Length: 68
Image (spheres, rainbow, N blue to C red):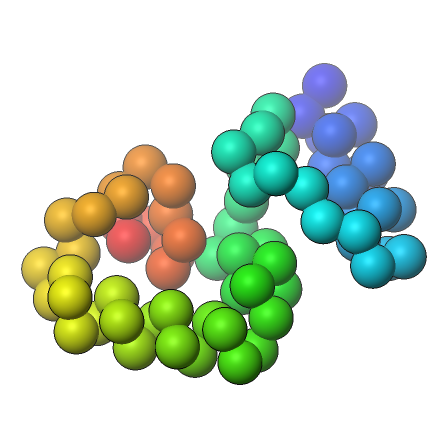
């Protein structure tokens, strides 16, 4: 079912769609980067480094890769 969800997500994304990030489809770090877009991603990553230097926030979501 997860594989089917991935296929559907890729179809939606190909036409510019987005999904609610907490869904039945696990996101990779690359998916998160694409979801936020390049400008917002840079700002987000900068804030993460500044305000969470020990990487303790959102470890299960893996926004910045495994182990966050």
